[in-house]
Image (cartoon, rainbow, N blue to C red; front, side, top):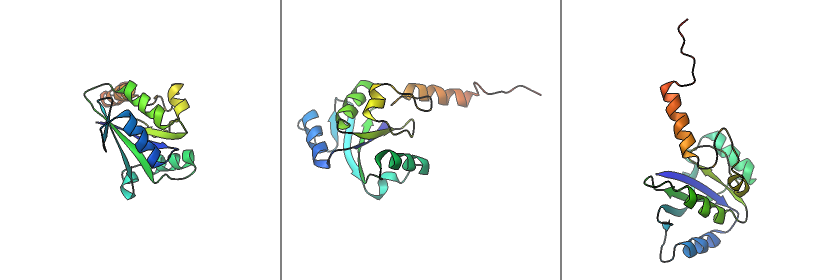
Length: 147
């Protein structure tokens, strides 16, 4: 399961209304496009496993530390890129940011649409992240010459 946290500039009620429209007959968690599980989350546990730098970057991007988010879990059985982009675009229509599992960069809707690269990755760039991780484990790109 891959995860994206979305911090939209809209009320929780507006988010619920949007998710209800996108997933008629669903409830928390909403199943969106058959592969995304979306639900509201918040409280002390929201940032419990975040790195301090990621919390600092999010706070800077939002102007404050948000007290709630939409957590979107993406099934590992599907690519999910198009579905994630569609949902995140709808959630960020009035502003806000999203943070994926692959970088701590707070992505705006414009960043995502323009395919901005931050730290060598685009939004929800699990393929490049996997390749980077695989290469690092294999020692590719490192100097292992005997001296």
